Length: 152
Image (cartoon, rainbow, N blue to C red; front, side, top):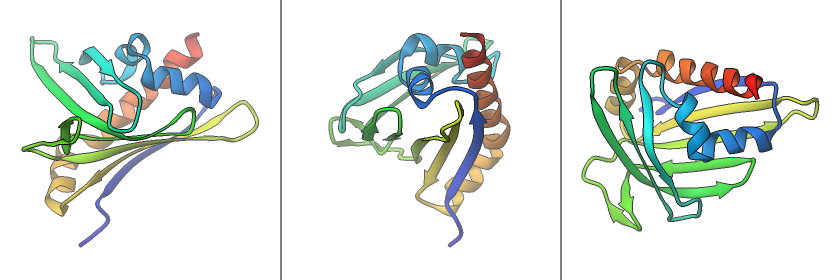
């Protein structure tokens, strides 16, 4: 059994509070969360432990992939953890894939270390996520997050 986590790290020129808004408020999330030309819509975030998080990932040819899960940890401007292992409240999902964790570390100089992790239950799930383009996709999304914050 190997490491079952995939990770993207960036040093972003923004405070943890500004990044928190960008990762939790729908009007900002919709601008950066998927590598363009893909995008998200219909974002609903109930930011509390056990609260539902849902959105649709949309493709340039009309593709729509609904995503639903719950929040496991909500630490404003520090850490956000969610999973698709539950679909709502504490109702188990039929297709649990991962736990998503975002960590914001204030570096004290106007920058923040942004870490986005995908933790998986199996080695096969890690392999599948890599083959789906984790590094390119999550990397491009992090780039778009930086661009959004730089433009504000």
